[in-house]
Image (cartoon, rainbow, N blue to C red; front, top):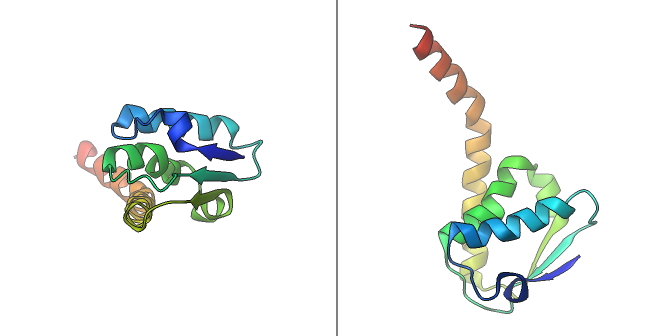
Amino acid sequence: MRMNLKKICDDKMVTRDDGEKLNRIIRSKWDTARSFSLDFDNILVASVSFMDEAFGKLALKYSKDDLLKKLKFENITKYDRALINDIMLSRFRQKEAAPHVTSRKKRQVAR
């Protein structure tokens, strides 16, 4: 499935609400789409809030392998590609640490 971010987001690629809109579209078609070709039109987004909401939250829900297979970023600036990579890696680490954090919290509450 080819997606032009400029058309989907109406040039609004700054806030978490903007990113959530894109995230909802991707998740709603996740099971039926073979892949997503996300065309950035060489626009510099550079918004951590937008990128985290749109793509970082996907890293919490889906595996790294699934994301690598399904998401294709086209016409994206080097800066935005690096930003997405940093956000996704951070979310993967968060997901891996979550069981440990949860068990620590339970132990603290039980004391």
